[in-house]
Amino acid sequence: MARPSRVPLVARVGAGAALVLAALALSIATSGPVVAAVNCRAAPAPRVNLHNCSLARANLSGADLQGARLMHANLSGANLSGANLRGANLTGAVLTGAKLSTANLSGANLKNAEAGAANLSNANLIKAHLSGTVLQDADLSDANLVKASLDDARLDGAKLVDARLVNADLKRTNLSSTNLTNAHLEGARLAGADLAGANLTGASLFQAKLTEANLSGATLSDAILVHAILGGANLARVTWTGASCPGGSLATASGC
Image (cartoon, rainbow, N blue to C red; front, side):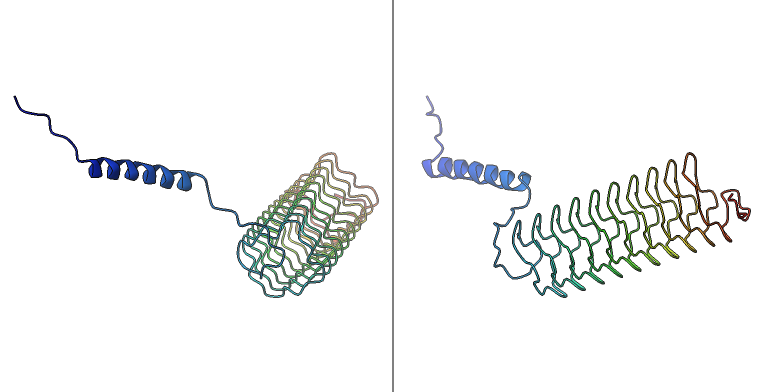
């Protein structure tokens, strides 16, 4: 009678170890990227974790902070001019008075951040998340905000001259007394937005949705409103000189 063959002990141990290693590899692969520990003294680098760190008035000009974790960080007065903050998480960060001119913030998350009086001129904010962000009196001249989310944000008194807000979400946004001269707002969603006293001279609002928006006292001289939706909007005391109406005709002194 033939004796059953036995698997050598070494082979059995090797097979078990291989299974353990395979399980460990699967766990690492499915658990997502490892998040670096918070280090407030870390040098600027992609994906650095500076959560809740104090970096007020820091000189980070030109720094590569792509994908950095800067949630609730204090960056008030910091110099981030030309910095790469693409995809960075700045939720709830304090950026009051910060210098961010020419910075790359495309796809960055700035929800509920405080950025009053910040300089974001010529900044790249394509598809940035700015819901509930405070940008009161900020300078966003020539900024690229194409497809950015700015719903419920505060931009009252901000400067958005020549800014590109094509297809941006500006629902319920406070844009009162904002300077939007020559701004590009084609296809922008401005339902319920407050544009009282705003300067929209020469702005393009082609196909913009302004349902229930407050435009009282706004200046729309030479603005393009062709195919714009103005249902329920407050148009009291609007300056219409040279504006193009939704139907394509020129506005009269009394409006479209």
